[in-house]
Image (tube, rainbow, N blue to C red):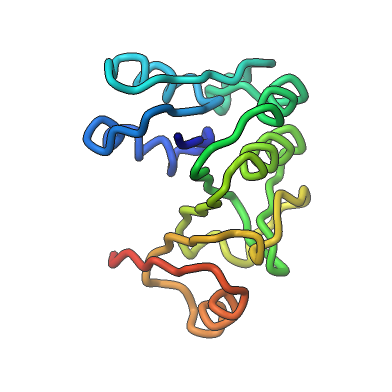
Length: 160
């Protein structure tokens, strides 16, 4: 059982779900709900609430409450910013929703590109030290890579 956030980065994983066949996918992304609903062998739990067209997803307190009642083996999220060893987001509702998804997961997986480091974001999602795995491109500055490695997550580098 996996949970996927509403980011475009995680949305790209949708095309790989059928071959990986997780038993269940939990998401608040309307696009992913549509994709998973067409996969006969995968159950889906859609988290609903206030719909936001700019992210094509459901965000906010209702989604957070639903997520708090669920568990997932792994949660995949992306972020818009990493600064001061924390995942940040410029939108409060999106930050709360991502945090609730991450908290439901036994394994927390961050998928991002190196351009997100040292970017601006004001709402705290989660400290990097709480993340189990980071999937990142090979363009991250060595100083930042050393800092990331020192926080303890397993690092998976994707060649670009």
